[in-house]
Length: 481
Image 1 (cartoon, one colour):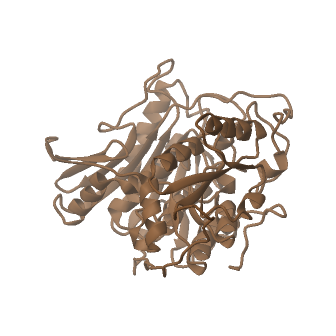
Image 2 (cartoon, rainbow, N blue to C red; image 1 turned 45 degrees about the horizontal axis):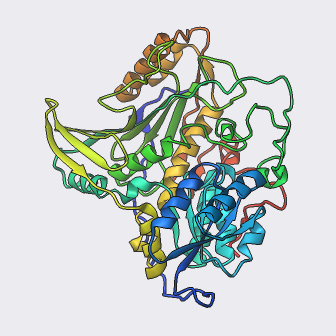
Image 3 (tube, rainbow, N blue to C red; image 1 turned 120 degrees about the vertical axis):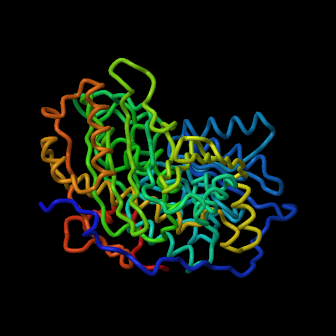
């Protein structure tokens, strides 16, 4: 394996993505609807419950339907709305929901493996779509979703709500105006506690009320090999993308936003592991992803272990556990949350602060009414690109193999930012009593990508992981129809 040398990385040029303005259309309204936009929420055992609350706040909207493959979740949601004096249609199978003429837009918060196909089916059924992050389970799905949105002229918003922060938007513009000089490195941080999900001896029973065929959908319908069906799907590859694609996608998106990059990175490297415990999870709880962009590298860190063994608090780096740091020639910007950014000079003095945010669903509604993609703060193309930065990082990691720490240091020594990040990772693991000379870190393979085609260069194994083998009839279509 050749040494990792940033100066030898392939550079992408000709950045930029076209924006599209859609012609106005009047959706089919039920009699007496008073031009309300009628919403359905698909998947609401977690984040979808927040969707329901956000939609309820919006003037000129009505929630008309709910869908979940778990009938217990479905029945509880319908009952809660009934207690509030609201009646909705309920569906276990989203295909039946999408046949309804009483729905104009859907808000999707299913597990990751369903995001793209659910959105594509909704687009084909004539609905506008709000879809949670990551918008896809792999790169192919995300690009197909963009193509379907454009071909059918639908409004599709990504659930990266930081894009609706006026504070962060102003900070991005301020940095791009050169107020802190050139960007040197952009760091994304996802230091979030993730304990063991336990280990089972064999297949577990599917919870009563769950249609497991529907729940699995595009993913393989394999025996349940973990204690919990719900939520812990994040930590296995067939359905989840690890915390990089769970929490981390938010910070990955903000980091790319500051860089102003509108294509996937031309070179990727990842390293890490699932360390500190042995359980049924397969995604890393400790990870570094290096995206080599022309403007500056984007370095992302995932940590699921606490600051030290037996502690509850998470590490912080330059004031953030979950956030973004933009290192510039004359200082740095800290984005510590979803709605603000703080600017510091080289001496660490705060010199500027930006705050403010609007409802992300309200912004989606604005786009639905105007039919103009430019009104969206997080058009589906933005979601595809940021989600796919997570996926390409995971591909590098998954194709790697465990190495001794001294070998890893030798491989990455030509890049100071990556070396420094690895050294902090090693210290963090040592504080958690993880001996990386024994529990070795997986060093991913360096990958080169053609950002125009979104295909890897000279690596068929990596290309194969840009998509998946789908389970009929839950197939993400290869042709736009």
